[in-house]
Amino acid sequence: MSRFFYTLIFYLALPLVMLRLLYRAWRAPDYVKRWNERFGFFKLPAFEGKRIWVHTVSVGESIAAAPLVKKMLPTFPEHQFVITTMTPTGSEQVLNIYASEIAAGRVVHVYAPYDLPDAIARFLNKVQPELAVFMETELWPNTVAACHNRGIPSLLTNARLSERSAKGYARIGSLSRNMLSQLSFIAAQGSADAERFIELGFPKERLEITGTLKFDISAPTALLEQGKELREKWLHGRGEHARILIAASTYKGEDEQILDAYAHLRQSLTDVLLILVPRHKERFQPAYELIKSQDWKVARRSAGEVVNAETDILLGDTMGELMQLYATADVAFVGGSLIERGGHNPLEPAALGIPVIYGPHVFNFAAVNETLRDAGCLFTVHSSTGLTREAERLLTDQEAWQQASDAARAVMDRNRGALDRQLKLTASLLNR
Image 1 (spheres, rainbow, N blue to C red):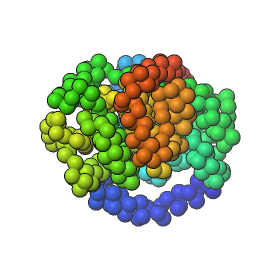
Image 2 (spheres, one colour):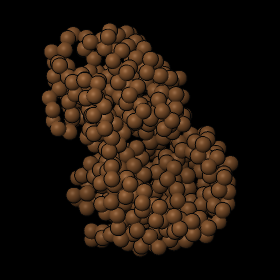
Image 3 (cartoon, helix red, strand yellow):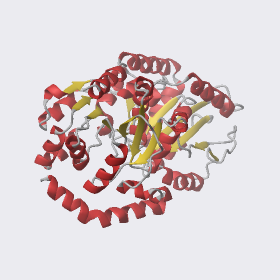
């Protein structure tokens, strides 16, 4: 497929794109706020220096990009960073992570423009970035072409390419080959990712395996202290062997399995508190209603409801607090993995020394999953029954828990370093 026909199809499909936006807004009203930004209509605060554009899709990529951007800010003090996302939850994450930098005028958030030539032109005319940094897998043909034609260096960093995505790119043949050829450089997470990019035609001399930024997660001391304080408060009065199980980034069809596993777990471990954190904001209310329908005593984090010895489940219905909630837990189940969503980031709990339980669907984090599993800190289950069994083992066998916790910290330490390697690449592209 040529880029001309791709663009024509996009323009013809634009009414459907807008209808989809309205449909999403029905469940999450934030989708229609600032809609003008998606067409390149926005104002930037006055800034005398230069700009770097960093594009992240949603929550996961925004969190992954944070260590790199935080390191780039003092490294390039004359630059303002324009960070774009596609989703409202991604926007909220950016606003939370960079609150002080936004207040100081060093960081600006804008919704990414649709991959339409006129929208991208308006965006680039306003931002005029010296460098475009795309996170992980977020590539759009017209966007990459526009940067290339304007001489803006572009870096696909922390790049991953699953077997499924590689097959998708291969199906669109020349469109994907031309798009990849217009990138300045790719920083791949692993050798399998690198091989897939090369098989699609990307020149190996413009590719480097840097590892994943996700291993460079570090929890601030203040966050760990807050987690410890919350844990003590929530477990007060529950008994000497009280524990916390967190199920994070969950979906419809998965919550039901988690609650079933929890019901069976409570038959033998009566003092276990479950923290349930749905992946998306629009699912907070449905998850709450599901919990209530099963007669569990639930506290909502967003409402500041008290968690005491009588509380069965804490619903983590807030944005930007996941790491803090992880810091309260003994064992973590990472969602999107019991259903076919490919799973979410298991490194966030592992970075805190928390053993991880994961479902069989791992395609979003296949290499990371394998690394953690081989290290002995991630355990795969295939059903709610398996989740009950594995959670019970880790929550009752202190020696097994300690071994998994130590393994998590060790594997994180062994794999750090991607941050410095990717920072070096951004500097080399800026200095061309």
